[in-house]
Image 1 (tube, one colour):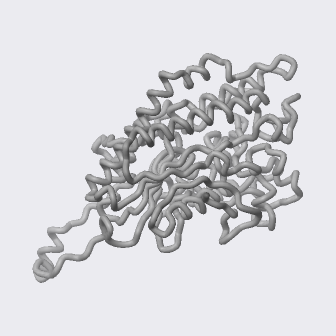
Image 2 (image 1 turned 30 degrees about the vertical axis):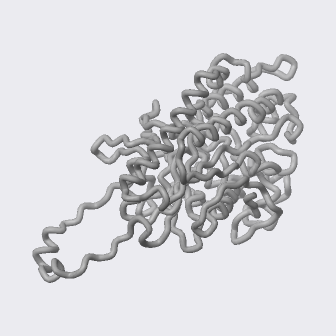
Image 3 (image 1 turned 180 degrees about the vertical axis):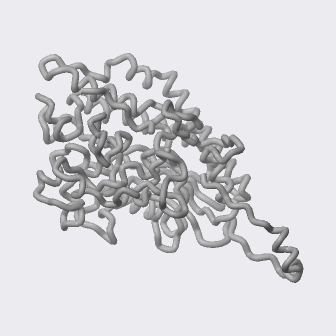
Length: 411
């Protein structure tokens, strides 16, 4: 089995107006009152999302998983990640900004998604040549900009009430860690398991020095967002930064519906992790990442920041969890059937290079899918609270859908 190449894998250019020609043809307009343009505290309120794949909309095409047919779970179709003006392609290749993104809370509030799958705190270009804008002011002068710079330009002519951020996971090399864990699972047996949590390449991400460095970079990202909004003309009191942490994507050992013996856990479930590594992922890796995000929020000193705790938001609907299943395992053949949201998974399967020739992307692996993104959208709407944002912890509130979204509560 080949190893994974995962998940490191995600501005709009404005058109130029010929104002001089218009002025020459319409001299009367020179003396007319200026149009009342949108801007800080003026116009329709807007929520903007920034950050990485856990907020961009990665895996938003799929509502659950099936090994029998891709059609069962295909909620958004082949154009799921098209976000340019004509819906014919991506503004930034492989950012995977799906229509299911949590930015679009509705209720008279506009949404705008600047996040990018694979993004870190700083802008970079990945080994495949994909541009990954960070939470900075990078600008190459030819249209490639960091997310803070994009936010600054967008917010200057919009009424941005709230900015939602998810960042830090890729600074901990999340994709590489998952790749190592699955590779170790597939290359060893239950008699002699090769765990990833004790591998030097994995442990290096969680040393005290690296944790401190990532915490400082996240804090700097928050400061960059504040600077961007100030440069766009906003007082700190005119907008709110909502920082979300990361949800648990897999259960701990006792919660898996597939045994770790044999290779069914990966070949069928797409969740090839040893029990010990799954336990470590929840108790150590996720806990450390989320504590680092929380610490960075404190360090930033921002007065207008709120937090959205997603740690347990998908519990009961996680990848390979006993309480849910593949479509063929729960007797369903479509994501539109009653009960599908409660019976199927909210986290995408981990896929390998065998994905080639299918509609799946490897980078969609282990990401919140359509169900999860709609659930998080509900929690973001509740956090927005009609324009008076608040912090809270997001969890499942019951079965079924409400206006097309899972029932969620923010406490």
